[in-house]
Length: 273
Image (cartoon, rainbow, N blue to C red; front, side, top):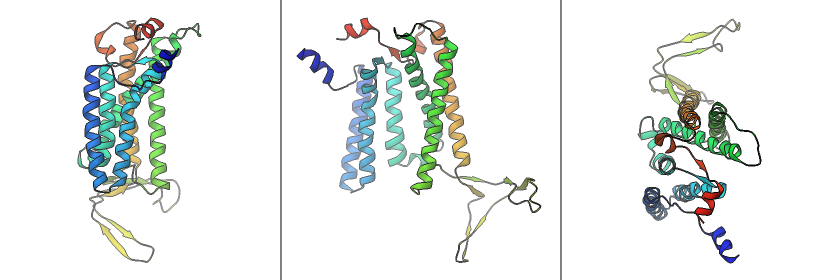
């Protein structure tokens, strides 16, 4: 009884050697950044470092609590994604300095969320409580829809941060042409096109004017949101296709197995005890 109690409370950790090595390296880098920002009194970065340390251990917690085995390749991708998003993206400003950094991460997010959705549905599909079996098409579709739902909720979160907290999570885009019905003098819902925009004049409430030499019109978040959802869509489709053929082949195939979470059966649980 005491042995079972100890096993239940033992801390989660990575068992795959490659995953463990990546985790320890990333953890060391985050701790180094944490100490550096503490000395600099940059408490916002300190918070992000602490959050990253928590996020890095979550995949291991996920596998233990839900009895799901994440392949080493998928685990490493998740760990690198967390580090790239929080430390490189936020603290080191890669979102601004590195072109398409945000696009790359949103594509990976679509892929990873589809993997999580696939694992959650596969748990029900293999459960002894249910007598039905879901088709490969349905599993792939649910994984895709789960990923897109998470992507949409994240865009809601970014929009809320911009509106209520005064942030700039939905990055602006400079465009050289706009099309709008707001400039139609007849108010008859006709689209008015304005092209070759090179400069915008900003008029403040006190009457002062300021020219913004941006090379175009500053779009507020729309292009960024649609781009993020589009690349999330691509990542979700890629995983859904992999998941479809994996289930269709009844779990055969080494390549797909590197990305497909596997629900542990009773004999796997007993063997790992």
